[in-house]
Each structure stands twice: as structure tokens, then as C-alpha cells.
Image 1 (cartoon, rainbow, N blue to C red):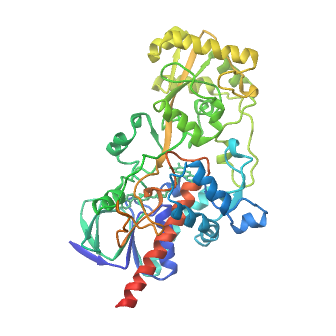
Image 2 (cartoon, rainbow, N blue to C red):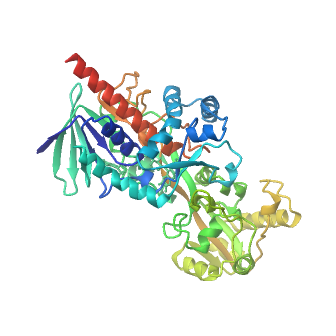
Image 3 (cartoon, rainbow, N blue to C red):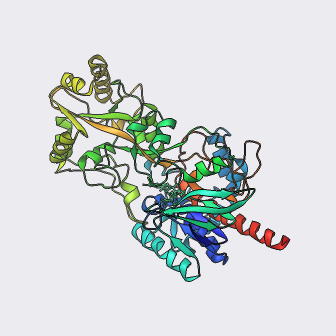
Length: 497
Ligand SMILES: Cc1cc2nc3c(=O)[nH]c(=O)nc-3n(C[C@H](O)[C@H](O)[C@H](O)COP(=O)(O)OP(=O)(O)OC[C@H]3O[C@@H](n4cnc5c(N)ncnc54)[C@H](O)[C@@H]3O)c2cc1C
């Protein structure tokens, strides 16, 4: 086996890994960054729009009073005290300074109101990448900087095993062809992004996994979590799905924005679950995490039901409803549109989606019930009750706001958009201490290992919270923490020698 050697191996070059590598680069500690993909960057590069922070200089300049105390108490309470308090505290305290670090990395952000309508009045905590495309280009530039300083970046190379005997001896990596290399080292930082790419693990943890629309980093197969577990790391935790939004399919998904079917997905129309019952106030569409959680709660799938009259209305009229993803796709400073339509292509889009099964069209409610295998009586009852709420402008059950009670459903050509719970990854993995070192069930740290980003337990009790940018903010900060601790530990060893 070919052998390399270095001080630190960083596994994964997404938010947490690139941040760890940047810290080592700045401190002039030699490292090898290994990345399974053919380019650097995971979900943090291709997906995330921003990061959460408190007490950043930008927030201070704007007089934001929401700071560490409110955030620490808020998170702890929100998660019913199922948090790693030490880690949460360290993350929050560093989150403000992380904003300057991001600029130094060439990934500048600006504090902005929320991208979600449900959170427009929240404290100003969301820091959005100034320009999404530039973020990706600048990310791709970082490896050249690292290499020029004498480090190595191995693409299309995955960590597959560890040689560990009372301390780390080597990280074993494999290239695309399966050829293995032994990297002799004494520290490894696992920043490989959770496990949403491991279909079996997903099915074991989530009963409705088959329904998910997985928009996450699918190269993340839980390598770091599994290798830490093999060395005795405690992975006990409730599964935490990073559920975020809903969509009919990968062809019609929120990241593409090119189909009227998707536009109607993103509005508070009438939603029915697999039992033909309403299950939530559809206004939840304006809160990405809660929207997807509601779908996860009805086994990951539901239907948006509308009739031909409504479809024709959208084709010819402007409708006073905001597309929930509108603000996410505005650049910093751009004014979002608060209406949709006229959608001149809507009929063609729905007809095309009817061919692929993303939309089911039927001549009557009875025919729709047959096609979707829904109980007809429940379907008729749900629609009658919803029509009544629209007619009376009063939703006495789910309490949808009056200005969203716009479209009843009559018998006649009817459509059901088939919606799936979208996921951006997973957020449970390894229990760690405040230094991001994995711990055993007895609480003892496993030396020389660090686990960061989406691989870590401790910030969330059961689902993604309504704090925008928290996952990505934590990924960058935890990479920073792990690199700092690895360097500290290396210098202690050096001093002892
Ligand atoms: C579409 C989308 C939008 C998002 N938007 C937001 C947002 O706006 N705000 C927010 O807070 N969060 C957002 N997130 C989540 C955020 O991107 C993640 O929480 C964050 O990127 C996690 O960082 P990470 O380093 O743990 O994983 P990633 O950034 O996914 O990086 C993991 C890297 O490890 C590599 N890898 C995996 N296995 C191996 C292996 N064995 N060996 C070598 N390399 C390996 C992968 O290829 C990948 O490059 C979004 C996610 C997606 C998918």
C-alpha cells in the first residue's frame, strides 16, 4: 500500500471540512484533505444559503440586541433540554467571529432578514452569502491556496478505515478504483456530512424514508460516524432528520424553479394526507422546517388538491400569495415578489407532470379517490369542510389565515400534486465533548479523533429547528473548533517530547 504522512487528516471538504482545513492552513500545520467527490465542497457549497450567528460585528453595527444569552436559552428550551450544553455554548460564542472568518475564506455573508416569510419578524441572526454563485467559485479556489502552502488535497478519494491502537496511527483512504493509500497521521477530523447517502441506514432510522426527496449530500454515507462507533464512540440519540420543504420529485424541485407545478407546491392551497384528511394549517408552507416536519409526520407524503377552475385562475390572473421559496432565491438586497402568476404555462406543466405521475388528474373526486387509493367518504368530507371554510372565510379547525382561504375544490377535472418530504441531510451521529472529540458511553473522549458538522449529536432534540442557518453555521464553527483542538493537542505532545 502506498504511504503518505501528515500531521492532520481532514475527511470531507464541505462546510466543516473546508473550515477545519482553513484553520490548519492559517496556523501552518501540515494536513491532507480527502474528498470523495471530484471537486471540493459538499452540501455547504452546492446548497446552503447562509449561516446563523450571534454578536457578529455586522449585528453590533445594526444594534441587534439578540445575543448569546437569548440564543442559548432559546435553543435549550426549544429542544426541551436535549442539547449538549457545552458544545452549544462554544458554538454560539464563536458564531459571531465566524462571520469574519468566512470573509477571510472568500465566502462573505451579510446579515439579512429571514428568507422565510414565517420568520420575517425574528431577530436579525441570519447571515446570507452575498452571492451564491461566487460562493461556489471561491470555495473551489481554496485548495490551490492550501496546496501552495505545502498541503495535499486528494479528490475522488474517500476515507474508508482507521489504523488505531491506543491512539491514531493512520487513516486508510481509497481512490475511485478502490486502490488504498495509508496516510500516517496522529489526528483525524471527520467532516463527511452525516449519513443521508446510506439508503439502508436511512430506512433503518426513518419509517418513511422511501418517500423522501433527498436533496442532501448523497456522497455522505456515515463513514465518520461508523468508524468512530467502531472505536467505542457513543452514538445513542433519537434520529434527527434535516427535513426542509416539500416537492413532487427531483425533476420538479424547489432548487430548479422552472415548473408551475412547483409554484403551486409552494403555496398554502388545500393539502390532504394518505387518509384523505387535512393534517395541518397549510400556512406552515412559509416555515421550511415545520412544513417538512408536518409531511414527515404523515409518513412523508401528501397531496395538494385543486380543480380545473383554480388552475385556470392561476393561468390568467395574478394571485396574492407568496411563493415560499421566493426570498431564498433573491440576492442580498433584492426585493422579493409577494404574488404569483399569471402562470401561462401551467396547463402544459400539469399535463406533463400528469404523464410522469408527479400530478394525478381525474374527471371527478370519485375517480381521483380510485386513482390515489383514497377513501372516497373521507375525501368528500374533507373537501366539503374545506369548501365551507373558504365560503365562510373561517377555518375553524386548522385556523388558516383568511387571506389564504382562496380556492375551494369543485367536482370536475381535479388534480392532486403528489408531494414528498424533502430532506437536506441528517443531523444525528456521534456524541462529542465541547472540543468535538467523540466520547464513549462513559463520557471518556476517544483521543486523536474529532467529529464535526452534520456528523454530530447535541444541537437538536428531534428535528431541525426554526433557526435559519444553524446547521451550516455549526458546521463551519465545529470545523474551526476541531482544528484548533487538534493543533493544541499536537503542540502538547511536542512539548512533552
Ligand atoms: C440544498 C441544501 C440547502 C441547504 N441550505 C442551508 C442553509 O441555507 N442554511 C443552513 O444552515 N444549512 C443549509 N443546508 C445544510 C448545510 O449545507 C449542512 O448542514 C452543512 O453543509 C453540513 O456541513 P458538513 O461539512 O457536515 O457536510 P457537507 O457540507 O455536506 O460536506 C461533506 C463532504 O464530505 C464528503 N465525504 C463524504 N464521505 C466522505 C468520505 N468517506 N471521504 C471523503 N469525503 C467524504 C462529501 O463528498 C462532502 O463534500 C443545506 C443543505 C442542502 C443540501
